[in-house]
Image (cartoon, rainbow, N blue to C red; front, side):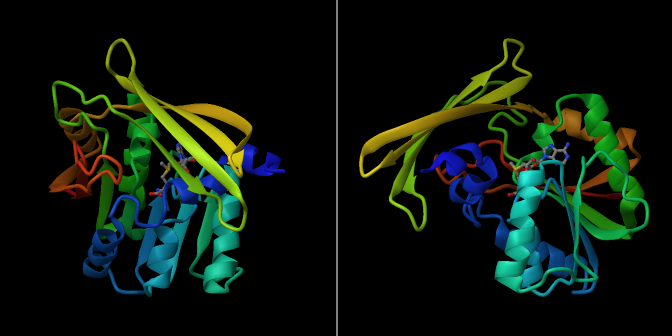
Length: 261
Ligand SMILES: C[S@@+](CC[C@H](N)C(=O)[O-])C[C@H]1O[C@@H](n2cnc3c(N)ncnc32)[C@H](O)[C@@H]1O
């Protein structure tokens, strides 16, 4: 029975967001190679299932620290390290099950990445500032941070409102899995609430469903600028982001490159 599958969103994450879902892996890998040597230290905040962190390890980087506050995501990273890289524990690889607001005392990083819209999980200025303080304190002298945000309204006055439905098959099983998304904006337009609805079928027979919702905070350019300046950091570039796989648009999708002043 798919009971376990239904409960475990982490197990579904890689189906929903296949490795190059955002079309961002090449960019991040190239950026990492420009920023540091293979033995440079990289910090992946809100690493999820290691979509990016593990890609960097596969591409020659040796020192990657992945932080996520969801232990089920962390479990997937640990499984992938063994299955994809054949490593259980390696000196350079660190996996931390904690909030990205928590300081990482002992290390300085050449590159800090916050990918896949993770930054919008921070729901207020205090949380956002703690993450920026954290970045500032753990960046090496010439280190850089990249933050990819794709909230479809960044830097805009009006919002696109889109929803989509798709289905896919869970590997090694006969289950077909439909996912519906309806995005809602809070009355003050400060938050986007993603309502996920999952329906699971086996050979077209309906088996069950579950739903969850994730609230994300819209971050405008001026708010990002304020956060960066308040923490005495500097925006070095704002690069164009990547297309949304479903809408083929890159509405509001951008990458902030941030460094020390
Ligand atoms: C949309 S996923 C992106 C994952 C990954 N960065 C990627 O690009 O595929 C967001 C991740 O951030 C994690 N997250 C959200 N808020 C967090 C926080 N305050 N501290 C650490 N992780 C957090 C979630 O558990 C989730 O795994």
